[in-house]
Image 1 (cartoon, rainbow, N blue to C red):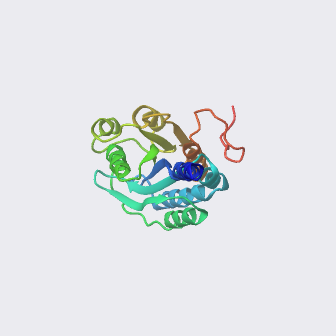
Image 2: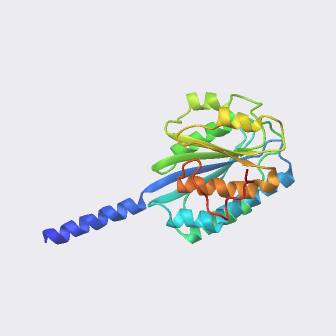
Image 3: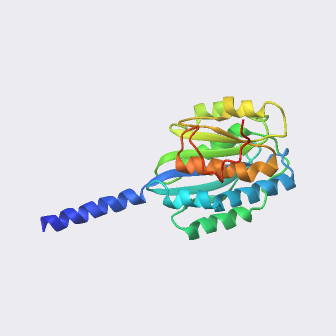
Length: 235
């Protein structure tokens, strides 16, 4: 009887460990006025395709123990944030399919407001407060410009619940000079944070695929990516 009870408790503990959330990931897309409709569509379709890629799916479903939960929102001005996908556990291929369909079908929420990046990451911090309890909490923010409205990211990090939150950046080049440095100096935040670079909006899908794989797999900076993902110029 004791052996049977011990076995049940052990199995229960293993099941609980398997069900534990390892990552709450909030994806934040730039819809400020510097992004035109064509570029927005490249972001929307690129994000859906990145999540749907074989390597990212594998990292979600067959990576480290525990589940990944995902939320997606758009940001632009001080109060112009729109939640498109509330926290969704990605426990199966069908749930990833659901998220992919939602992202591919997003309709742009705003198109005439400036770049209030501090307000955008603050929204992500409050969104993470509503997420399931997870080992890691990450905001993945993409954009093509620097903060030009409201408070900046560093102010948000001081005044919003950002303890143990990582903010990674995906910079889309082709806009103002200095944006890569701005993301490194002002946006990147927290444990193991990094910045990925897309060489224009046409490179967004490839850069987002690399970024999602690294975030979901919790790879250290400089760790090798699968050959299919490592499309960055060599040398």
